[in-house]
Image 1: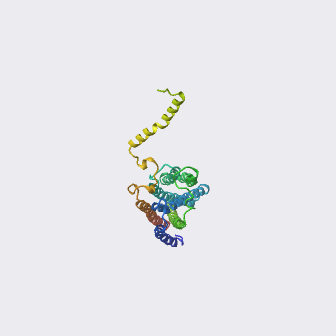
Image 2: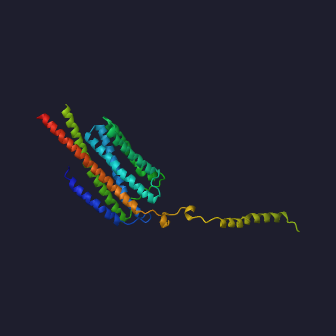
Length: 218
Length: 101
C-alpha cells in the first residue's frame, strides 16, 4: 500500500468518529427540524457517487482510446463506488422524504434520473461480472453513458419543476451548518480515496493472478 | 289593490333575486356538519396535531445506520475478495516457481 494510506486511514477514522458529534452540535433547521440532519450524510454520499461515476467514465475513455489496463482497474473501482454510495443516497433520501414530503418516493425528475444513473452503474458491474470476454469495452461505454447523465441529475432541480430542494441549498447554508457539512463531505471524499486505493490494489492482484495462470498454461 | 307598474315589478324581482338566496344559504350552511381543517386546505406539517406527526428520530437513526452498514459491508467485501486473491496469488506463484526451477 502507498505510504500515505495508513495516516489517511487514521485521519478518516477520526473524522467519522467526530462527525456524529459535529452533526449533533449543528443548529436544528427551522422548518424540517431534526430530520434535516440526514442531509450531512445524504449529500456527501451523492458527491462520492458522482466522483466515482466520473472516475469510471474518465478511466473508461482512457481504456477505450489507449487500451490501458490500469485505467480499466480505475474504471471498475469508480463504478463500484458509484453503486455503493448511490445506494446510501437512494436509501437516506426516502428516509428524509418520508418526513419532509410525506411520501417515501416520488417519480420526480431528480429522483428518477438519479435512479437511472445508479442503475447504469449496476448494469456496468453486471456486465463485468457476467458479460464474458470482451465485456470490458461494452461496460466502458455504459460507464460513460452513466456519467454523461450526472449533470442532468444535479441541475434537474434548477431546470424543471421538482419537489427536491434546489442546488442553492448548499451555498446558502447557515454558518453552523456549513462547517459540519463540509467536514462530512471531506470525510466522505477522504474515505473514497482510501477505497479507491484498496479496490485498485485488488484489481492489480487479480490481473497478476491472471497473468501467472497464462504463464502456466503456455 | 293597486297594480304595480312594470318598473316596480322589475325592482321587486331584482330585490328578491339578490337577497332571497341569503337566508336559504345560511340555513343550508348550518345544516352541514363542520369540515375538518385538514380536508379544506393545505395544513403546514409543523401545525399538525402531535398524533398526526411522524417522529424524526427513528428516520434519522435509520439513515445513519444505513450509511454505516453499507460502508462496513463494502469494506468487508473488499477484505474478503482481497484475502481470496492473495490466496490464489500465493498458490499460482508457488506453481510458477516450481515450473521455473
